[in-house]
Picture (cartoon, one colour):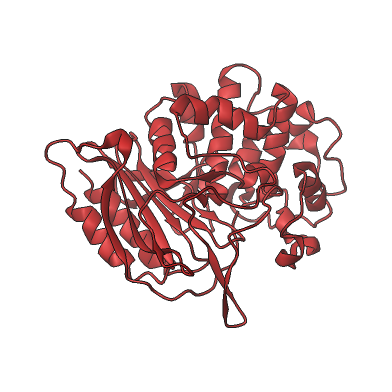
Length: 373
């Protein structure tokens, strides 16, 4: 999910590095100085709290935190908090779709209409002309359902349940997006809710169940879950805050069922890092499907960025490529992450504020992953 932003005050509280239980002993030669430097710099990022998890060959998986996980109680971020990972969910969904491609159950260049006949047939949109690849790469031309007038008052639907089909139908009432961008790229949450429906049609199970059975269980991700209608986060949680009319509001509790395949997952920094490490090191996809995921088009919304099938590609330093997927949620939760092309180094930042110094955080993230050893 991508949403608008606002302001939260800085809280310069830094929690020392913690080794995740699965990697309790760092390998010889572990240099924690880059991580410690990043934590110090992140303390001035104007975020209520930031969970930081890294994975590197010499240090293994390690977590730490900056600021407070709960402003009311003063609980510090230590790095094991649960958070909504928002649009980072899209990479998990794309992975499931590509696994099904590898199994011969879905073809990337088949039409949406092939799987959901007659669903998209309007004056502006035709499912016979939209492919699965275009959904995953945001080149379908379908508008974002969040642009529908229904969602202008975000609080009005905070506790409501929504089916993914409802969000798709909302999008079909909207005018076409700007098609002047390269490859008609236009980021749209509708694409992924639609992809989730296709997964259900093909497998007979929800996208949440497929992610659980194909990714969460095989990787042993004990702190990742599909929330359904659950409005609270598992403990310990990273509380999230937004500022409205000069007041700082805790919006952590929310029914995010409408986000579905576009952004519903709940996870921790360690679990997200484990997933992306496994993905880029070839443990979740066969070489052919991973290669398809990494075929990119220009993402005009991100400076210097390119978009593959559910992944964002950056090359801020010539020759140094990283992958990931940012996430913004209406609750205020945000996510930044990066993993090297071979999956050997990764960083995940979970952020409990609707707005923070984004350029500064992104710069710290890029520098940290370059310096990890």
